[in-house]
Length: 235
Image 1 (cartoon, rainbow, N blue to C red):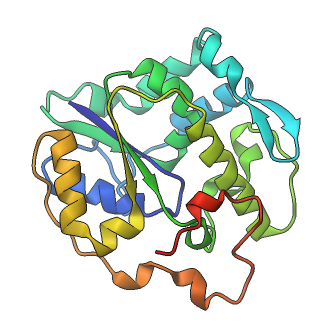
Image 2 (image 1 turned 60 degrees about the vertical axis):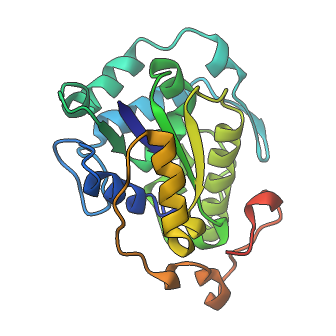
């Protein structure tokens, strides 16, 4: 069994990675404190390879249709397989990986690994954009967009791009959606649902209730009219 967590940086995906590790899932040879499989450079380069085929329409509109129809660039699988070498070569019965940048290449990851169990992870964007992340500037990963010097707006654009990319990727056969807020506030019920999806019980980890709704005490701009309204739930 192979498992991956799909979610933007600062969406709380480390909680899922730590849960999987605590539950006996092999998450790779080297992990950082966030539960990311490292080193990440080959996967970052894979993002840049795929980014060449994203058509930018201007504003907040991208066309991902080429990613679904074209042959995958031959450089892409080599880079992904190099990044995932410790996982793919492991004889562990349950294994997986987590790296937020995987979200940037989801269309081709699904095509390469159609049988993976995908955990789609989402957090209220108003909390997700409070802190900086490597994917804040999409251009660093080969994605064209109208860059702004407004840091919060740049993060929100990155959030919107990744949200649209996930929404427009043909769904894999095995996927489940999880809200960070539910994982924190209803951990037992969420773990039961995840356990039923994966086919084995998951171990509880320590969570902090104060991580939910941090935007309420934030003095800066944390809400933008282009963020999907269905994502702006009260957590």
